[in-house]
Length: 64
Image 1 (tube, rainbow, N blue to C red):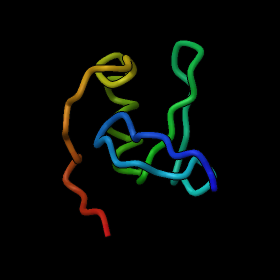
Image 2 (image 1 turned 90 degrees about the horizontal axis):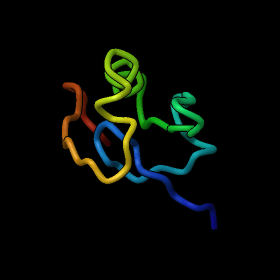
Image 3 (image 1 turned 90 degrees about the vertical axis):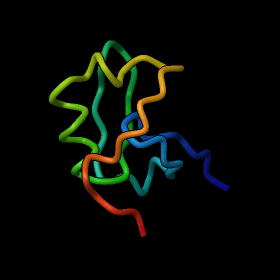
């Protein structure tokens, strides 16, 4: 069973191998459930790129 990671924007748990996108920030790789979450992260990576901070935004998209 694959280890799940959390999308830093919406906190959805995802399998990194199934992520819609990924990006490195300050030496850490982040994985995203959708391109919308990735776009939100890219606009302000310091807002989302620090573990332990919960923002709970979904960037206007729906999860199925």
